[in-house]
Image (tube, rainbow, N blue to C red; front, side, top):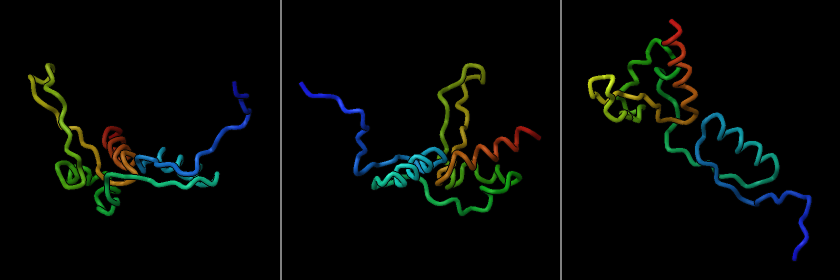
Length: 106
C-alpha cells in the first residue's frame, strides 16, 4: 500500500481545447506554473472588422465567420429549424456575445 502525498502532481504538458476567454486563462495559468501548453482552436483570427462593430453583426450571419448552426425543428416555430449564429474565430463566443448583447439591449 502506498502513502498518499499532500502535494499535487503537476503535469509536464497539457493540451487546452479552445482559445476562448476561459481556455486562454487556463492556458496562461498553466504556463505560469511551468507547464508546457498547447492550445487547439478550431477558428481563425477575428480579423473581420464586422466582428467588432455591433451595428454590422447581421453581416456575419451565414458568412465564412459563422459556423451556421441550426436547431432541431422547433414546435413553437411551426417546425422550423432556427439559425444559431456562432462565430468561428479565436476568442469567441466572447466577441459574439458582446455583439448579441448589444443587439438585445437596444
